[in-house]
Image 1 (cartoon, helix red, strand yellow):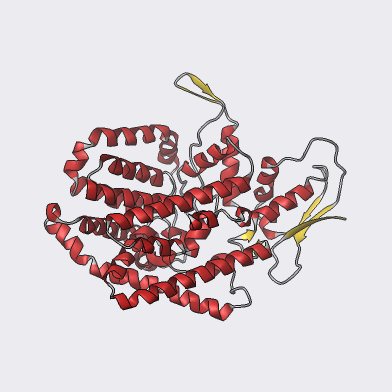
Image 2 (tube, rainbow, N blue to C red):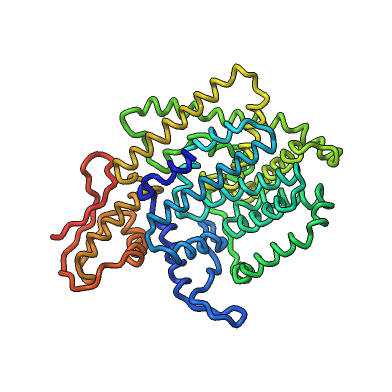
Length: 463
């Protein structure tokens, strides 16, 4: 509960740049477009698709649907962020506890994983890809519970999550395929037993998302960037413990660690990279589990079955990312990260008791990193980096300043994230329109405040 509450503190410190405004713009447009379904008139139309990826493919509409639901209750993006952060963090935490209980791991492992800066900051975004983190965790936890308890609602929940993942981002395909293959091959009798309820879930979601599949069929396009490595994608998935560490945060938050503790923070990051070692050791320790499932699946334990699923997911991820040359970007781990959490849990379970202090030091390092970055973002009104930018609350304040003047006031924008992505402020102006009445005409300059090094705050002046 403490971690969930912490995720909702100062939600206005979250990023708001390019993709988030575009998703919201799509949701605003669809909510204002009437439609008819089964001879019933609706004042809105469910979005047909989501964002277009950097490689040309168009992703599913689930993230836009979520924004459409938010807009039905509020047009305040900060409140949306607070609600989403709380929900995402709660679902992720509950899923981890559920998985630990099913596989007889210490529940403290779930707490330690929830301290990850990647999980913390991805939860605080109105983005599409980050939804893969809670949904994939819930899917694996539900499927593990089904393998253990044979409870019908667990497998139904796993199938429902799988459908949502496919309609969120293509990077979820490997883990969805893994559970589908295991269910169809190893658990065929169970699949047949619950065939009607599973079929209803699939048919209903396919029916709701029919416009997306129709669009994808006629407009699918995917390209491989030139100059990329033909081999790195095959090995990139093996770094799936990335989200259990603090590695690569500087790609998001800036090139250097914030003062006054760059050396201490670098040491803390190095400590958190033990998660990679734990996951790799766990992969080796679980090879016998895969072998037992392959030889005698009916006699294999729940743990063996779960590890066979996550191994299949990793293999499929290598087979997908290799030919497509996918090896850049932390967000490509947002669906498979839970597999490597399971591998790391296996290592910790097998470790001798004298290793417990190492886990405590690891947790302390994660807390230090999260707290330092959160305080720095709050102080600097965001980050002067292209992948984070000025905090949402400060951008809202700047938009409010602009709205004191008439719409025809000239604007000189000296903030790259606004000049390169004009919809970033434009969508905020749609969400938060000015009060009625006459406003004076000004000559506005929008620039960084530059009150101190690293200051990402935006100010609006009238010249």
